[in-house]
Image (tube, rainbow, N blue to C red; front, side, top):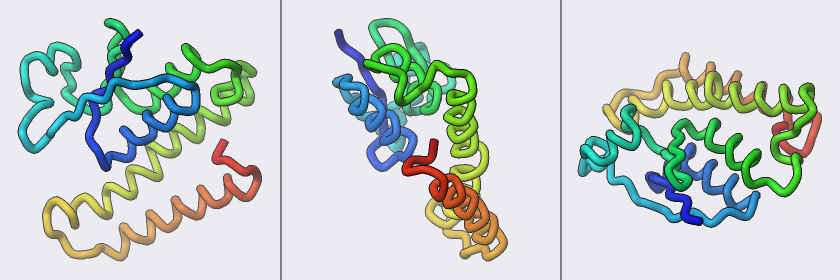
Length: 150
């Protein structure tokens, strides 16, 4: 069984997929995707993933992108139990809520603050920093109620 993961080192979503794979005991065949060289724009990659994004998982012909979807898939497909992605609808709803919070609030606000700085030389934006701090406070609230985010 070969499961390929097209990834970029240093990418939080790519690392999250790698951590999830490790948690369920899946070995990944890591395929470095050099965005600066345009690996994600090559015809063979676009055929695999027309959105040309990483991470992208290829599980023997089943191709999936979007890190949170990949994480859920790995947990369901390869998890030895349902501790990472519960079958109980209420417990799963909490996990999904935290995954969506990560994508739609926490990571979004992180990117809005830091990407313009790192990739465009923009100055530090106090208003965006306050929004990120607010998201981190929400996250702290999740962690105050359990050892893990979900």
